[in-house]
Length: 503
Image 1 (cartoon, rainbow, N blue to C red):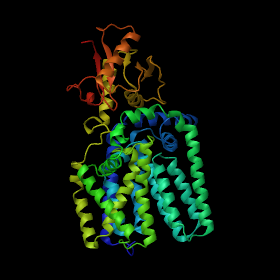
Image 2: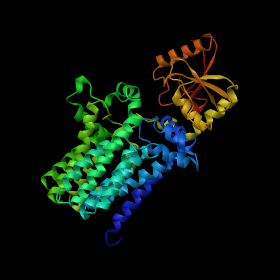
Image 3: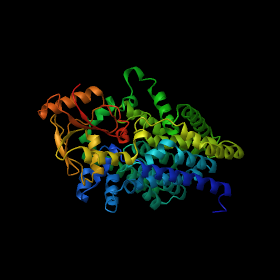
Image 4: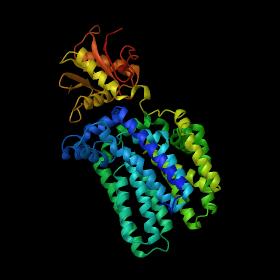
């Protein structure tokens, strides 16, 4: 170790890794499971058969639900369920470090490790029960193995790369952009390789296409048109091109990728400039890397952006400032890191240490992820306080009005062992909650005050309640649109629990 690394490099990596892991564990311990996480957890509970069947009902591949089920057999606490994403989010930058050190140099590896370990939104996503960091772990491992296979011309190593690529595919659909880019990168690097290595790579690529076909048949085609259309026209609307933005969309969308990675539009803009400079340097052969390898690396960095933009134009996948294209952030960080490799070593070292010292300021000024629950209402104790209040204030067998996202969260914290069964019709369906109440839900969620009032009026009609009769309401989830929080009850920042009466 000492022969390969300077002492400051070991110290830098150790400090960054420790800080990143501590920040992830802190959030995983303090925050409650948001609606998406609660849904994922409830789908993973039950038997192995239940978990396998449920894993095909969501909009991401099945691997994380299967892994979560295995974890749930040991513990169902928030920290236990989030442990795989936390560890994956902490370890994948180390693997990318190993690959990039070999592919581009030490300064590039150090810079990418720093960005991907301490980027604010990556820390948040790593501390949630989501599939992104698991996919990034397999992605980074596959790059390490692919580089070894290409340089050693070992077909068995290439076979291991194929397995890791398949695990990427089974983790998250955004990995399609990596699969395509890595395929192009390998094609450019396979010139002069043995026929056996090429055949092994081609067989792995064919198997990956078959795997995508199986996933499309068993999962994707079942949710196309429903939630897909809701995303395009709803909460991810800005991540798809509109008629008036067809020409500027790629440029605005690409800036958004860097802004999300850096949790800041100005810093993201600077990162984009450095990325472009790095790609130009690679293509022009100004990085000290052998020319054919440098150009292949440039294509690997650019191709995910191009593929993701095409996916957005096809209205099949978002390309905006959100976690859904987090894989793009990995290549964005890699490009910025390659630029650092082009600087004099002393300058690069000073920039790295300066960036580390300024990390608290970076986090303090970071933009809030608009698709996440704000920090003032996502603490676990608020949900527990809400349930305590419900037990003392709401009589048993009361019919409670709510929407599904709140139901998912409360069902997890009330100890449910499976996802509550819900109706997709216009009628409300009831779910027993905590063995005490009957919770009625209908629509997916109520995202505006008007939608909430319309749904509440429909609830009154279905249950024969007059406008003057009070109705118990639970309103939480991603969007809260009923009433302001009650300052006397802090938990209402997370979930409003109150009796609604007609004005």
